[in-house]
Length: 138
Image (cartoon, rainbow, N blue to C red):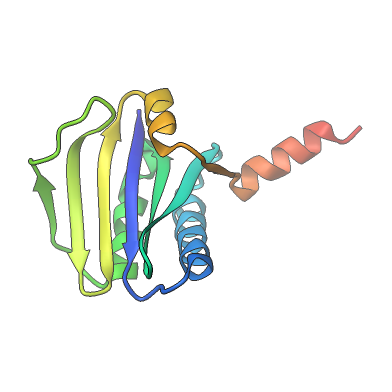
């Protein structure tokens, strides 16, 4: 099972600032969870100075994902959003603060969610990157 995440940080005013923040967030979660899988993510612009990122994590990252979200947003009050209904995600948990917002949801159909994300990049955790590099070295 995969987890879909929507990550917003309100103080990021450019695409590049938000890209760096999302990348730091992904790196922190994957490092703490010692996840060795490919992580998919993208960055979207809501308006002139508002950005958010979609990220896909393995469900094994959930506890580290929540802890890192709480650290970054300086908040700890998670709540369920029952207004969302989609074939690509369900069971939405939300953390909001003055600093931003994180939405975590189950992602039962990864291929459909990747289509929903349209263009996405791939993040390789260090463990996986080193394994691939070792296997490709003769």
